[in-house]
Amino acid sequence: MYEVKTYEAILWQMLNAVTSANPELDTREGSIIYTALAPAAVELANMYIELDNILDESFADTQSRDFLLRRASERGVIAKSATTAIRKGVFTPSSLEIPIGARFSLNILNYKVKEKISDGVYKLECETAGETGNNETGTLIPIDYIEGLETVTLTDVLIPGEDDEAVESLRSRYFNSFNAQAFGGNIADYKTKTKSIAGVGGVKVYPVWNGGGTVKLVIINSVYGVPTSQLISSVQTAIDPTANQGEGVGLAPIGHTVTVVGVSATTINISTTITLQTSYTWQDVLPYIQDKIDEYFLELSQSWENEEALVVRISQIESRLLDVAGVLDIEDTQINSSASNLSLGANAIPVRGDITNG
Figure 1 (cartoon, rainbow, N blue to C red):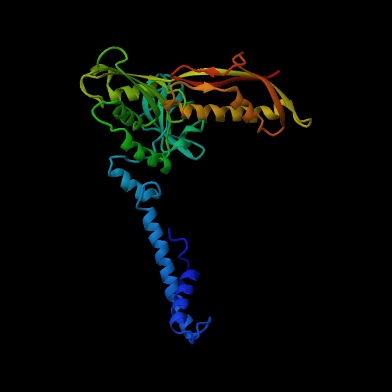
Figure 2: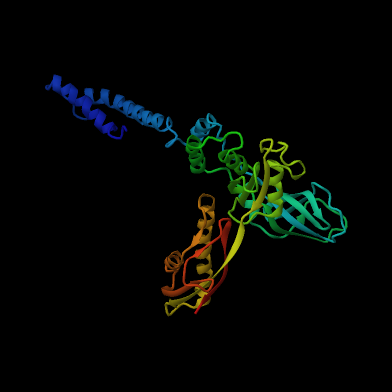
């Protein structure tokens, strides 16, 4: 708003005001008047910069993170803090009982035993919050000596870790809070409460899906993949524990019987005819083609919550593959042996299958 109020513009206005009233006075650079007014012009320019900052920080659409946190909290919209990843650890021998709290390391990250799943299989919690705990797999090294332990392998992500909520995500939730009031078990209330649970990236709410008082929640995990049974169970327990369904023990209102399920994965096999530059082979470009397909499917999965059903489009696949270095042309693309776009089920997300070049 005050972009024109620069040091030069302010100083010119001040000098012009002097010469307009007293044209005989010397206002050249180095003169007494110039030297007296220049520092004041600097301070006034700084004041206008601060006024611009105050205006930006006064409105939610331009606020920086710290001020947006304060504004959102006034609406009861609290930024999501980073959460820790829950992973599966496989121990040998399986008959060995591993102490709860035992710690292990893999590269720069440490993990501790949280809960026993079955013989030789335990839940491990990453000690570092954020998505970084989702990435590593491999052999763990015990930090504390455990007699009889042979091997420990870090495998599946049971509940994904999440980074601190991004500013734009919080800003979007703040504005959405004006459009849909979350109250007393309505759809907005279920969405707000379910998405506040660690590991949940999105949810579709189906009220009265199996008679009066029944609610079905379909969730996707925070990395926009199929949730594990452990995450589904965790959400079920938080919303409406199975043992006390409908009694209001969880976050659901009394009288609501809630069933939590996860999205399903639809495998997408792609066949196409790609013309490559002479210096490239299929094996050269395949990893990059796979990355492009994964990026497209991730974008679709991220929009799943707000779409009635996802559609995998041939045009999108071809346009993205043309961006791969070495690809000259592409034609005859088929999805699951069909030359048409593929509409998925309402609660399905795409997962990359085979990619073949005919």
